[in-house]
Image (cartoon, rainbow, N blue to C red; front, side, top):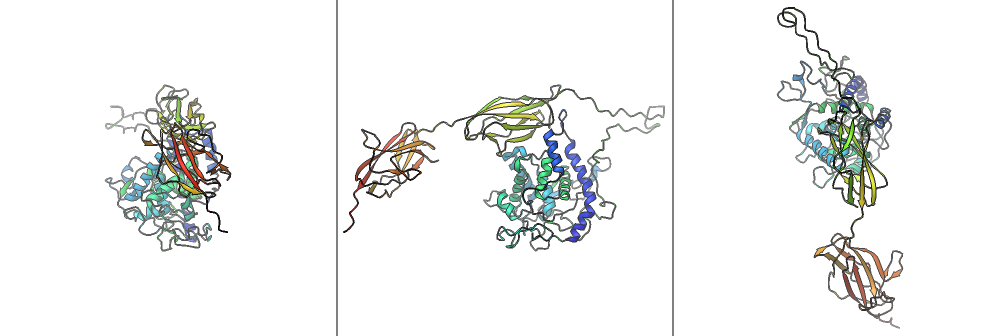
Length: 588
């Protein structure tokens, strides 16, 4: 353990510097006319800076991880573009940006799945790639089978409290082969207890396997998106990463790889990915992981002068050089015939339109849906600047207000969406709950004092399904002895225009006769939910197949032929005979 800690201390300064630049780059690009965050986001960012302890054990149990840093470069800086790592055909051989094919495919499919199920999270696949790099070296360089399952188990250190968290066995050794303590498992390093809650089937084989990169990537994406997080908000991004492994150095390392992968990656064949120089996390099942040579990471030797051959991002306060280069004086440049260099043009950026940006409604402002269904339209707004021009890349926060159980897709009450090139941002699909009534969806321009836009939404009661016909399934005569019950179940089917109809309300009543359908007071009966005899049941409905099986029918001490009438919503009626015979007297 000592070598690993020593290595982390030596690399701390470089890690912090790179991560600071990465964080600056993450927040640098904001849409014109919109501030970088709203007041609530600033408060959340301050809280995230305090790095509060998570409510639960981190996803990987606080296991060791790879601390190698990416060879970051400044894009398009004169003289360095040809050195952009990993880009084929650019005259360089650095492969760090290459991600094994199956692993890269798993990350992108997880992003696509979360975009559909939880679009307000704004999960980028590059974040999964950054975590996968730090946790397991991209599944040990993409050492996976055709279905994405690792060729050999990837196990973290034993979580026995010796340098790591103390987590006693929760899976009987099913995933980690240890029936005494837990170990982080698979390419995304889930501890078994966390996998039990967050495991997903990412490759559609019906299994949830933490050793499968598709399953693990989708599970990690859902974990990062939990609690309504919007990963385009830096405070939420930091909180999600810290929830994975509660360590400031871990946060810095993941952010540096995240920024690196956003600047360009490419696919390499499975099994050919670059392995981190130190074991860290992501070892094989042999149990030797956690060891570290104490040597420098993937950036080169650590000689006190910083990583060898490493490039750094611009400092957070660096300003890009937007000036026009001054040509040399003399016959090859400057003002002809004077030998005087041409003065630089002013570098003051052009003025932008002043005034308050605003949101305008696109489409209907009044929305409606039937309880338990989805709204046909989603709220949609357009962000424009003071000149009325669309603002792209602006953040719009949608919130559900009022007494309702309606939710956005992903079962969240709020979601932040980015405007497109036309300035529009559409809320995630809105799902109506079972509660009827009206509520409000409010759209707010994050970080601006522009007036919010509100949509009125109404949830209407479901129309009561109706049936025009009832038919018994089976024709066996229904008989029973007095003081007993009918042994055969009674099942009926409800149809409307010949089609099976679900959720049709049905009333069952013991009646005196077909001509005089008054409720009977003797003969067969049901039991209500309190166990009391009743001869009428009203809380009955057909199932999804349009069928209804009645509760057990009991008999009293009256023999004879009795009539059960079933009446469905919509007017369908079915009478069924019940025969009760006298029970034999006990032998004396």
